[in-house]
Image 1 (spheres, rainbow, N blue to C red):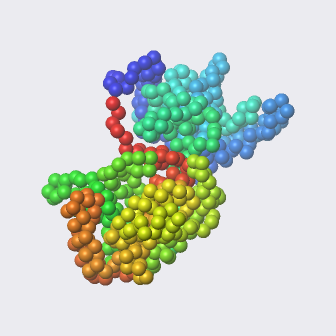
Image 2 (tube, one colour):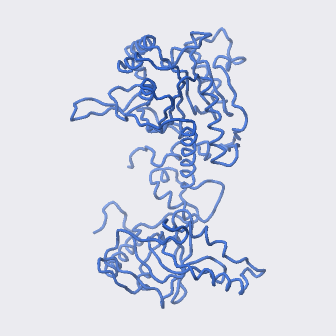
Length: 516
């Protein structure tokens, strides 16, 4: 039976014919498992990457004629032949068949390892419950570029000095019914890369031409390393990781339009969270002094190279600290993350070189307009607009913008020296807002009045103004310690760390319009 939406052509027809022939030969063509060896580390299954890293040192040096010396080959193989391994992976290159023997490479998505198959001594394994052996060379003839197989055999180096496995047993694991992407250059169409991330990842693992650009897998491994380091730093500083609701009865915690759904059993409308802030601050009320959450947020707004409707934030709250301490901590954290992930503190982003090793600049929002806009033309109502028009695009190096107008910061405390200014900052790097933090408002009466002002703005047509959250006011009424909080955009930070100009390139499965 063919799959109706998979295009049929000569290649897909041939692959399906091979699958049916394999079914006759080995029985189950999609077996449940393959047991790998544990040669590298006892109790931990071997991967192709682990074997390559452990045994690559046995590859002898090349002589002037481009081949290793015979005595070095013999010495290497005397040692390597003692190791029998069981490995599995994807066939990453078309086979090089030489009469009754063949070479082919297997990949685990990171590394490639050559395998050598000889008709005279390769045995195939049946996949049904009774097991048994089949003609291994006949099985090999039915394999296609991209199939998954498991092999068992001993290690050796070839006459050219390449680490390889001499295969003695082979098991078929899964068929690639579609031909793989271009192994030489990868996938160039960004929409295909984003829409079919699986094909993008495969293409990166097969790519022959290495360049400065990271493969898709390298991008997401770098993302994982950044998140891991941020989590480690917070835990080392006494923060507790928590989880707060993703479906909420009120869309609160930020100024944004929410996604709405309905809970049938409770017969209530719920909203995909736009921010976890008010739940995290409830935990400060309850006695947690340091909390953080790596959270998914959802905002029913525009899509751009810097905006995705579903995105990842790191939010954390620090009791008894203020906005200045939080800026200090944020700066040290990001410097440590960049150094840990990259090994240095100079980030290349497009045409810019961003220096995370220097102290981050701190600049008041009104001060940032000095010399650009006449002071008598600046008001609380137009300050943010003027900043976005004249300053934001020029903030390449890490810069904290401080002293926001209080009316647009309904969850922030006012500055003691100027009640019209919020104790709030935003961190800009490469003209992007990376973080937003402030001294948290903990006066329930003032918070209530701020919410009332927001409700009035909604009544005047501002769909992004906040709602009244009565339970949050009740929580504050039990008393919340002075605290600082921050949200850091993980996706944009990863854009910087990987030199990607589109947020879609650092999200595994970004939202796209449906295919037509």
